[in-house]
Length: 214
Ligand code: AMP
Image (cartoon, rainbow, N blue to C red; front, side, top):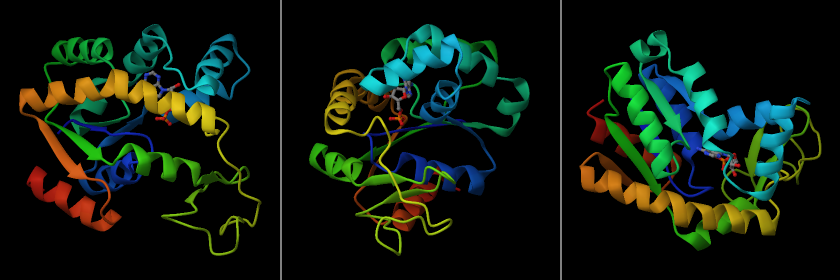
């Protein structure tokens, strides 16, 4: 089975994607994270990606195509792939469709975790990561036990560099302009599974599994 998980920033895509990947034995492509890893390297490509990410802008389709092609192997398709945060635009959806055709596979369902703009903003502002061990927290929905210190290693938590007010607004604007219309197109195609992302994590997971027939 091949799945796409889409939704505004802060809708819990990563959390639900990880649960599905482990439950269904899928291979996971978390586009934002793959790009962040590339951006952390001091190469010309890394610096280019970092500059898009720091402004909340989408990286170019050329870069996305590179990442995608290295990932779409026969071996990964045999297991099934979960695409998280990709495709986000019509051209990206076209790129994916062409590649899928080449491998004679298709996307089975597009899971849409829906939360309001206000909720997305509230959750993003509360997101923290540990600079030492990489653990993720949310001061509203998944707070650390002790102030803003990491439960696992005790380091002071920080906000991601693309989670300042200005960059958050830009990322949400890009989502509304580019990704929402694509989500509607998947709805028209009859493969969209829309879930209320305001529910508890476990309830969302169960609702998705029930609808996938798993
Ligand atoms: P995310 O953490 O998924 O919101 O992604 C963080 C940043 O990575 C975005 O603001 C973009 O700069 C970049 N990015 C992630 N996914 C994509 C994509 N499908 N297309 C272009 N840029 C992306």
